Length: 153
Ligand code: RB5
Image (cartoon, rainbow, N blue to C red; front, side, top):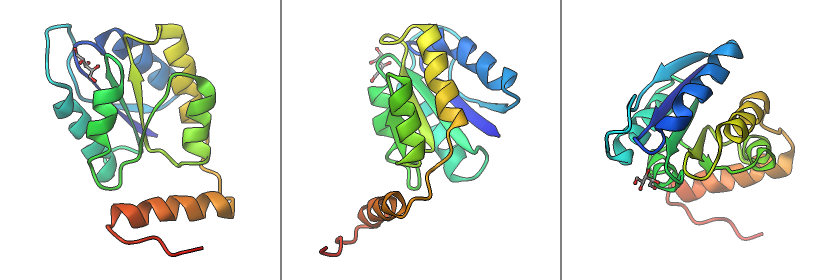
């Protein structure tokens, strides 16, 4: 898989351990973001990662900032990108399995590197569920994204 990774200055402490995980798992990193702790704005790198996923340059994306909040909000403004902010492996597994999230957001001021690695490992190893109820709900999300009203049940 090709995995796009981007971070701001606050996310930098997780950048190296997460890239090491991706590469040691046999995946290819598509790199965005900064390689130091000099302040930069998170929307730019989040948009770059999300754009790479939208355009098919990457299969999945990882955005890292201080909390993961700003970068997840920014990534979710890109059509076709479903970014989940995760602070535990269970949420990461559900984000892939139930929600088919294609970008994960992580907060480097919230998570230590070992936990962040576990979370991302789970995200990368989990496949989207094909169970009809999950597929139906994802399609409803896409309908909202397209500006359509949801059909009444
Ligand atoms: C930077 O100080 C911080 O605001 C940013 O990394 C992120 O946490 C925003 O949501």
